[in-house]
Length: 109
Length: 109
DNA sequence: ATTTAATATCGTAATATTGCGATTATAAAA
DNA sequence: TTTTATAATCGCAATATTACGATATTAAAT
Image: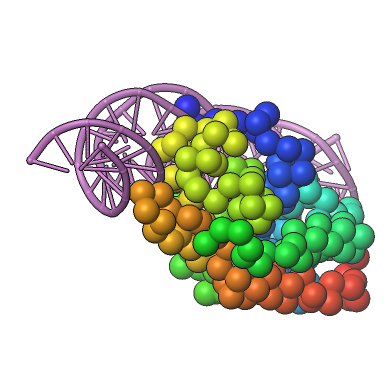
């Protein structure tokens, strides 16, 4: 096996999990941190800042782009990556909605 | 390769990523949903509710237990899993702290 | 003490992810 | 047009994850 059985879960469960999954790697958190703190928003700068190869950073950027949380705008030879504020807010909302559920114990435990 | 280079990231980045990672699987989201909605809090019931083998559910429960978001209390032959409200709130807080960063674009893009 | 029910753990196959060197695009500069 | 700089993609090796059958463990019931 090894393949996640997405078909047995709801769209919402799959969607939420896929967002969490993309955020579930320290390099991608670090990339977001660097972009937000405006230490680096260009692939090559991220390569120097973090200690990962260009191909690796590019791959992580791609995954972040996939969920739309960052967007890249071409700036001459380089690409400037920045947070897509709308998507950021919308993801923030989805996660908040999940975490704001009432988790108090009633019947069981 | 294939091994995540945790040593090049901050503790905070690694910690945040590891929480996201655990939440980054639809089965684990589904388990949390079932526990919260009090549809099932016992391993065997989760096995019937979701369409996964007992060993698989047990493994997912273990990972959720690892970050402390659920706790299991022995109830006769079975174990009742429920949300650890303190940990839930604390994780909620950590994620909110991350997402409440000011992501507005200034210098770049 | 033996049986039964529930859960955890082990071992393993299938698949996914991570990381990187090499190569390929892309676009500005010479 | 050739060179140069930047980023994306390909291909691959190492490792991790997912899922599950089989087997242990645990605790109640008989």
